[in-house]
Length: 240
Length: 111
Image 1 (cartoon, rainbow over the protein chains, first blue to last red):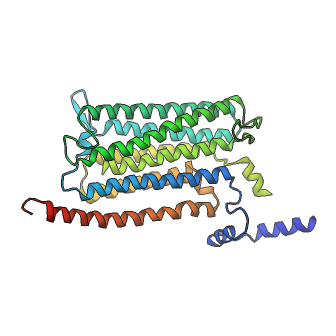
Image 2 (image 1 turned 90 degrees about the horizontal axis):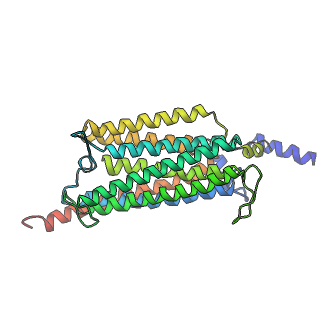
Image 3 (image 1 turned 120 degrees about the horizontal axis):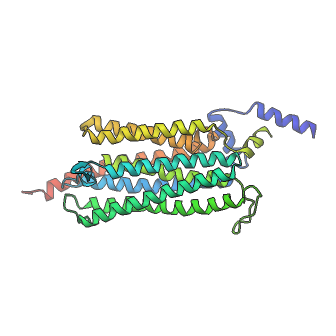
């Protein structure tokens, strides 16, 4: 036993770094992502696949916009809000961006308090995150309503290239759906935190696995991803 | 064992770090909004949009999603496949240039 322990220490001491560590992890003939729980690894791999889904949407939008001979509607004017007689470009979108970033901030802090096993603060911060997420979705619903009233349809709009509407509804619709599911996911995990599932290692009704505060971090990965996608949508669809 | 214990405790970072990143995300978002507000045009506009976008994405992935502290094999397994997207973008840029050219040549006025 003692000998084995000594060998283990030596392996840790001479652990390769950089690219060599990747080679040794993948060729180790055991769990490739060492010290990463399968839940977290699987969430990352799901997020990678989701990255490809949103990439395909944004690339198809790029292709439609680059190949059309009709001028593309000016997003700055389409999404402008008139307040007190002055027209402010992209105001609602800017507020939506700040709301989503704030929700990411509260989520990051919820994860942090989770690992400090502060049940109350974690649950409250998660509920604030869910509230900000719901605010974002309702502002998006307002924006959709406004655009539909102005005559934007997936097959045409009053300002220019017909593909504007289809790209807009497809991209923001999918993103809004992700936010909505994120809010539901947040409420489910926040309830578990509040009930003390992760303090008492209560088993999940579906997986029967012991509750751990890592669930909050995995939930956080999904939520930050939703914010991340919005960063790209904001840059390419609204600002470009 | 030392690593296993570290893992059991999870990611531990001071709250201040998250607040600083949060503030930076606000500043960068405000910057990208002002790109539109002041109606910057041309190469300056596009380079600033991409710059602010990449900085924001980097902060979110590295700090909020804790990628900066993850094991290198996981980081590479997630980030390297994304380069396929860039190849796809390059292919579709060429393809849409070709489509636009065909549309102008064959469907444009006087064609």
